[in-house]
Image 1 (tube, helix red, strand yellow):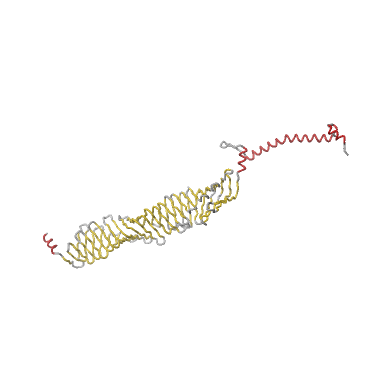
Image 2: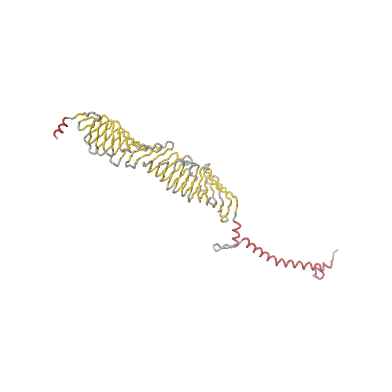
Length: 468
């Protein structure tokens, strides 16, 4: 069964005993091994060359990175689609950040470029959303930077548009340094810059602020701060306009119905308050407006300035924007360019009728001439005062009383009618009408319709006239 001769020859080294077939087999195996030793290095070089060409490993002058490092960076950067970040804020509320594409800026740095980012956060149950065309997200700082067509929506009540904005989820604070334009259902706003503090519920519009509703317009060259949870805003150097009426104040605090309309419910002005209406100006230290009544209350150092040259002052004032009435109370004083001064406890200025009614302890001074009455009305178109009930004119040496009277400002004379009595140095004369000249400080009686003048003269006075 075994060929012992061949086995012995194999171990003894007698190779010549191998048959021809075995010799052929050994020769073929040797050739194959030699071929592989030559081919494998060539194949390796070929594959490496193809890899360089396919993956385009380039170097530039700015960055010196070895091929091994560059390959490491390439393969460690990731790029994902339809990615969602779950963010836990400091108040333990959860916010989300989505993007169509998320691409790592640097491997391991948690810095990402975003395509079509869309963020959502909560403000005391109200939903705030942010979206843009592009952006970046720093996961370490929880900082989101948005660029191009940025849109912010507050609880589907108000939407704002700008070109860039940033929001820090960790600090719950956002801001933007480009023009922002916002729109509610029936109101709008705009400003050059803005900030938003979610924790405090405050949004601040900065520089060239304009807030509009259907009835009102508020402007401020400085800023307006919106307290979203309290539905109010505070603005500095503000101007509030309703129709043709204008309210100004160093600081205006306004409460509005909601962020959909910005309709003002009530407003307060502090410091250098001004009202403009139909050519009239009113000033005060403080002001208060109620939309339900249409009344503006003015406090402290109240003053009305008329274009015709007179001013009225008081401790307290009320302006009725619907009826166009200024009501002044306590220490009312009116001064005219013609030199007279009128004082009273109360005054009512009717802008429609162009009348100024003075009531209670009315007194008008013009040099040494004084008129007093319980009530007086100034008619602006006629430039005259009409006095009612117990009119009294006091001059240098005489006094005249009557039921009613008229003071003609330009003529500087007063006419008295009804139970006229003139008293001078104890002499008393009565008549139907008296004319008091404030320039000469003289008064004279006039009989009407054939009436008579009667009086009582003191003898000493007659003697003085006879001696003269």
